[in-house]
Length: 291
Image (cartoon, rainbow, N blue to C red; front, side, top):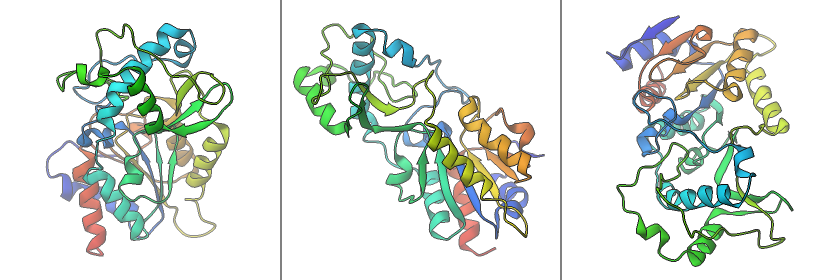
């Protein structure tokens, strides 16, 4: 396994990773480390704040838990929706446009791949921009809920200044949520939840099957296999690691770009220890020169 420890990032990327990625189909698996340059903190990267995200069972435990979640999310979403795609997102979109990248499997819920122009995206853990009712299963846009929460809690967002920290899931870290009013489903009065996979929930089976199919599609009937490009994920949870394991089992080369250790390092053909924006931009530049 080749490892880049941070110096001469572009040259090492081209020397180690490019032969595995050039002139063959590629699927990207992305994680929170890709979005840090857009101002969204990650969970496990070097220097990341300690985070204990709410589990699904906790969310369903009662009104108090939902009040805490939606108060934090209401403030955090007002900021998160302003995040813009960074150079890493744009580089992947460029690679897709050039025919080098078949699509992206993302563990992120921020929607920045689509905002960057990525056309083929599987949102493994869902998207914060959508809301679902746990009772009647009605789906709706997050901005609509944000408006309703603002009406129920006038001035709540403005109470907290820019100095309030954000959690990796985009929620604001608030000392108190007393008095916050939670909005119910407008159709049935049921419990609303962002349409994302919480810790303790399972990714929908059809979504998992689609991702497996993307990875297995990298193994052609003849010729060399494609490659799986992992960008910005520590692969600490099984939901993403399983696709790396499947690729490795099939003999599909795995290129990992991430700052620090990942749980998939031993499965990587090449591991580049560096920032996604720099590395992916260098990769897109190489493609643009036709080298």
